[in-house]
Length: 283
Ligand SMILES: [Mg+2]
Image (cartoon, rainbow, N blue to C red):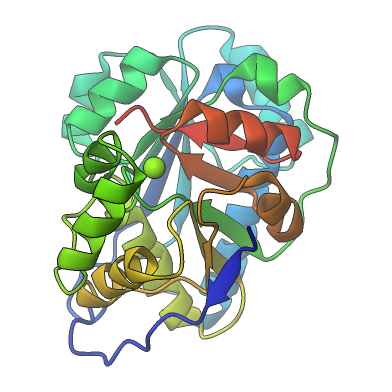
């Protein structure tokens, strides 16, 4: 089945979240055991965005802050950081994750350990598990711009309400989506992260950041509802790809995102096979 791309509906500005939000750092916390190769490239791409932001808004604190979470060998970690010219990273010792999440606003948490990602998700933080083994098999690539982040829809940007209906079969799902086409879905764990990315995009007014929706939904009512939901939040992605249940690998190969987030293991596997760093969202 052919995939189809749709141009997301234009945001009319009515729901804009950008005006009065406080300008705070956008914190990405990464556990040190996955801080290598493609994850370092992702961190470098974030840093590139910081340069563009600082140039345009020299006084603003609204920059990506990459927080490394480490429980040992701070020395070797320091050298990894300096070798990669990432000396503005902050290392903190491993501590009770709950306390860290309570103390500090974390916008994205990447861990090698599923229970930690689950704990963060429970506390309302966008979180994903990255398997270090799978990462080893990825081809060596250079960090490059622009920053590209791809998201699955259901159970990532959106809640899992429709995915639960899908368990009752494709027809039940399609009927459900047709009936509820005009009704936005509830937010999922990564909605807020997309929101901050879009806020930065608007501030920069350049192509320094690209966002993608890569969903198994088709372009009919199911896809319409996805776009309708984003629009109801005042959000959109630069591209939305509706795959009607076909494999996500070829799309990811074309987009080459720095990272892709999905809640289903099969899509995570397909992403890695396509050479894409993928974070599993255990939602
Ligand atoms: Mg999903």
